Length: 428
Image 1 (tube, rainbow, N blue to C red):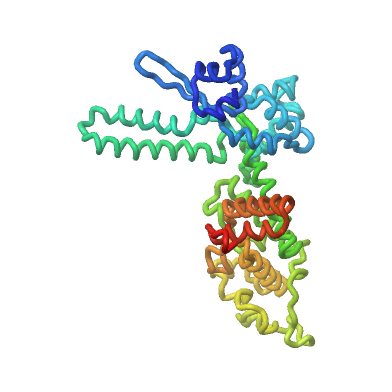
Image 2 (image 1 turned 180 degrees about the vertical axis):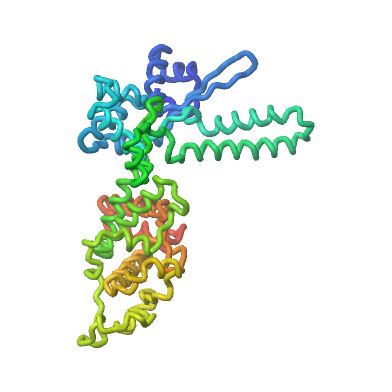
């Protein structure tokens, strides 16, 4: 059935049976399983009194299963994930019945299962299944547009104006559906807490403690999460080979912080400030191990410099240091300076700030552009172009395969053709 849909595209049940030469009952049973695993989407159309359903294979979901189909997390999380993975879509209530047969909501097992599912949902290992997701995007757009046209039917508009207005309303509804999918609280409900717990919540304000997974929610494995995990692992390996281990640790921290921001749907979730990177960076990472800096005067001690002077740290170092690593505490915002003046005047902190900027500049100035600088104010803001990075990893993988089969010369030719776009045989 899948082979027929992949080769022939969108088909009805009768067309699938005719092409595949399979019995309708067998095709129906196969389609039920495929729809359950989100490998096939369907849409029903009405032509007068005639109702016809078309089916369409989602090759990306099938590819994700083939590439990342054996994801296993630790302990109880792995068991739950494998169970959902096996059945495609599972209601949370059914998970409780399987992993906590006692059904006692106050038992440690039930609370543990509930907490595990909630964390996996919040960290995007799982995603909530919504009704509109079983329909192909093209059919969903057509359905919404037809509904809007029907609403505007008696408004006395011209056909062109009505189409334009219907298209505008359709796009608004599509955006609402997209926002619903991205809602960090989707599939979660507020947890009922007693008075003792409520006092504790006031002291420790976190959404993770006040929200639990909704028993009525239907969940499936989010394969895109694992695609991102493997992509990030490949990027870290590449950074370590090209720049160094410490820079790779900094880059890993940046990717982790961007992921947290994305999970929480923060504003500017795709960018991160230099100060934010430094403040959240583990102290056990020695930032000074990658880049070598020579003091102008080895006998001069940084500690002897007056803390009252608002000068660049690089005045203590050789002029060979690039301007991009110059650090002036005047660049700090007034609010930051007032709240953190002791830390800013701490020479160790300022030294780590200078080193972190060196690592960030190395990542951005590399020919692969692991980081993009989007703002220069307050030591800069940075972002990762994930689309470009994925494209880069694909290119490197192609080169590795070609070099293995045809040698280095073939790989060199591939790079030239890719750079030029089109090359004459004589030029090659």
